[in-house]
Length: 276
Image (cartoon, rainbow, N blue to C red; front, top):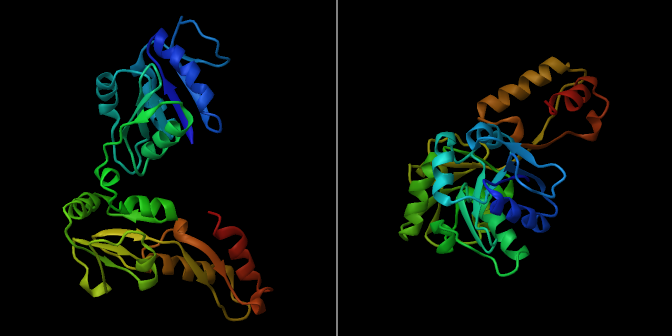
């Protein structure tokens, strides 16, 4: 995780210097106003916060502000795009003992980073406002993140989460083995893929739906006739992806029989294509 620590005055820059002791293992850059005193080897200086925020927003996985929350909200508001791509935003006070994960708590990792900092910084506490965390309710976006699954129709998540928070039933269209692996299945009901509606969570790599859909990675087996060419293989592969609404990132691995280990077209496909 690449982290930017943004400060705005001498006290916050001094706090950032102390915060560095607790960010071991992360790639961290500190931003501070020009002409402030510091003992940093590579402080990234700026004149106006507005001058650097757009590039910082795009360049880091997380931004830690040692700045007043109100000022942070005003400054980041024009940069907000979508919860699937916005960076994790945290605010920490000057004493480094109060941490607020402000934005992108789940997918962006702000809650996770806040919890990690609380473990590292003596006497620090965090203020996580995400309702599913406070009530120990399953968060499907976190389930997907933990397992490396792609999410489709993320905007449907809010309605699903609200149903769970209100202790209403949520249907889950998936395979029994996946359903049984969900750690907290309270108020979840396993249904078949013919029962999908907008109150259903779909967990399948192959089913296309307008509902919240989690797509586990798949292993693909490829067989072929003798001496088949690379172009025929790649066409069949791309047709398969299109048919089942899959992306290359959804493919865990590609396999074939040992008997096909000398097929030139298949070897060329395995070497060149899946790395695109």
